[in-house]
Amino acid sequence: MKRILITGALGQIGSELTLKLREIYGADQVVATDIKKNDSEAAQSGPFETVDVTDIKQMMETAKKYKVDTIMHLAALLSATAEAKPVVAWNLNMGGLMNALETARELKTQFFTPSSIGAFGPCTPKHHTPQDTIMRPTTMYGVNKVAGELLADYYYHKYGVDTRGLRFPGLISYVALPGGGTTDYAVEIYYEAVKHGRYTSYIEKGTFMDMMYMPDALRAIIDLMEADSSRLKHRNAFNVTAMSVAPGDIAASIANYIPGFEMSYRVDPDRQRIAESWPDSIDASAAREEWGFTYEYDLDKMTQDMIEKLREKL
Ligand code: SER
Image (cartoon, rainbow, N blue to C red):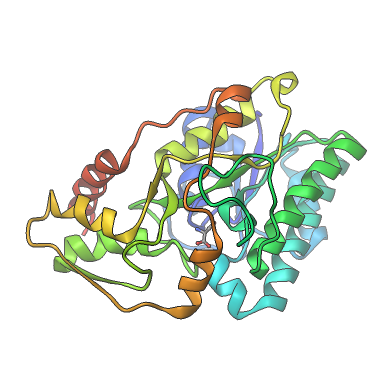
């Protein structure tokens, strides 16, 4: 991994991954691309190109222009938006992924794309969900993610493309806001806690989902990409997680640092249904065994850091 092209570089993960990679590999070695430029640091701190991932010509030409040896394909719609616009989601999530994989095949690059806990479904074992298990998601986002995992495996087996991937849980960060996800509450709650001392959750108090703090997620991506290929049995879509929490747990953790923090609930049936179809807690032992996955932030440590950083930011 020396010269990297990122799609969706101005999104939730890309905004921070771009900066982190530029720090490690050099600013000029990391080409950020997205559908529109903005004035964020990711767009301004090194090469940026406008790329619509559904346009393979544009993607291929950009990758060739910079002679990249790695593609990190992040551009996608999240679960709640995909559920509201399933056809758009299919075209963007699957079309974009096919174009990115084809670019990787043609230019013989390494390849990363994230999957998600959304790849699991209601008949998946809910607790300590194994790496290899029943998937059968009931959301368009989940269908895209499972198909994406399989496609990435296919490109490895059929064409020898060095594809790798992680099944991310909800990602929490103070830098870029997610948009249209089911786990977004776990980010919004910190913003509202710092700004107003209260939050109304659209997910029920006791609904568990896995979460992870962004610094751990970024390190996991880089560690996986740098791992010795011969150690990887799964390659695509390793389960990774740092905590299994419900809205009530995050609220209690925040109340330790913001006394008087008030939590109320007004459940959104659409996102609640999605959340209930996902696991309560996933098992990350394959990631630990095959490439040494670890994390640093548990709920309490993350809460402390989020509140401190948001107080500076807001
Ligand atoms: N955070 C994503 C979502 O909620 C899950 O991968 O859609």
